[in-house]
Image (cartoon, rainbow, N blue to C red; front, side, top):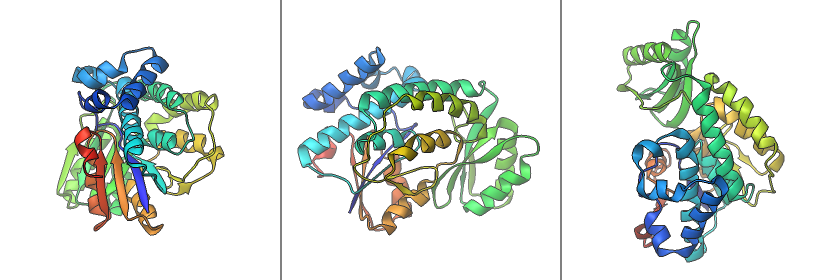
Length: 304
C-alpha cells in the first residue's frame, strides 16, 4: 500500500513549484487558482520570493499548500498513482484533505491563509518560542516540561521521530525545559527560528478563530483515510474533520505515531508531495525499510 504525505511549515523555499509550472500546464493552472482564491500573486511569491515575505506565516501556509497540490496533480496526471492513506504534518494536513477530496483547493488555501494570520496574532512576538530536543524519549520530555512549567506553558508540540521532539511555550519556560533536558541526557536542545509557539495551549485564541472560519467551509466525503495529527488515527468521517483541525492548532503533532499507524495498516511506500524532504527524513527513522519517494520538482518525476 502507498501513503501520500504532505509537508508543513519550514519546508518552503523561494523557487518551489517553479519548474513544475514551467513544464506542466496543470501546475501553472493550480497556482493561478490560488492567486484567484486569495487575490494576491502567490505564484510569484513561491517562484521568486523574497524569502522574508515567504517566511511570513500568513504567506507560508497557502504557499506550501499550493506547491504541494500542484505537485500532486502533476504526479497523478503523469503516473496515475493513488494513495490508500494520506497524512500531513501540521499545515500539511490541509493538503492531505484536498488530496482526499474533503476540501476544495480554493477553500484550503483561503482557510490556511486565515489560519496563518490567527496563529501569528495569537501570541505577541517575543512571548513564545519553540525548541527541538534531540536524543530523549517522549516520556522524559513530557516529564521535563511538567517539571519546569511553574505558572507558564511549555509542552511537546511535535513528536516527530524517535529522539526528535519539538517543544513550545513561553520563552522562559522553554529555556528552562532546554536546560533540564540537557541535564537529563539530551544530545542537543536547540531553539528554533519560529515566529510563534505553535501547537501548544498559547494557540487557543487562534483555534477559536479558526473554528468560526471552518464552520463556513464545505467538507465532502473522504475518498481515502486521512491520518490526523491530533490522535494519529485514520479518519474517514467528514463530520470529524473540522473538530480535528481546530484541536490541531493547540495540540501536539503526533507524527511518529501517525507513520506507525500507516505501517501497521500495511503501508510499505511513502511519497512526500510538495517542497523539501523533511518528512522523508523523519520517515526513514520511523519506518526502517519502507520505500520513500519525493515529488516537488520535475527531476523528481523521473524516479517514478
